[in-house]
Image: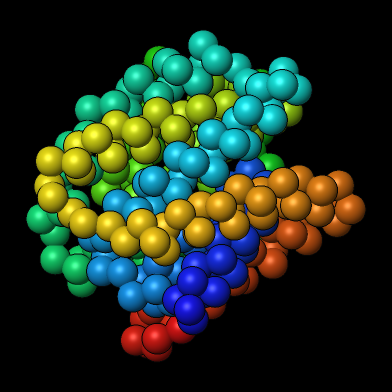
Length: 247
């Protein structure tokens, strides 16, 4: 019963972050699964992909209804990450748990600092095919290896590399995230990783509901303030991981 309650609370927090910021929620999923629900790093990164796909699809539908998705740019960006996402998805199942945890921390620290600084990426950047391919491949690899959506990476990359306006960058990033996560999850299906669906399903349900609440919260509280709160929370999670504290 305690594990179920923790899954619901963690899912609500993840959905709140995703709904209010369009990013940052999925990177909280992996440590929540490991330190609150007792998943191994491999199980957590695989389950994280399932959760990312479900919550991102819900959020994408809302952005699509509002006309805030650049479908062609998003699909082109995602295409560059297909092979890296698949390769990283297979590779991660054979990586020691300690390495996966350290890799996650190495990614989470700059992500948390970026959220604290609240820097807005420049618009109207020059589009470079090489840079777009490189950024898409990098994001695909991160998604496949660590089981996180990478919205905090995808949004600035879409704006700076593909010149997608900020008004459409969040919705478009969700499309990229879903494609990469689906490919990575399909690759992991061959590794035989077992998942505890009795905890994952409540987590997803709470995340989906939290995402809707997050959209309403974003209309009442300054996005910069919300982003700093989640950035500080992410850094606190990383500090606890480094100290070996069971949250």
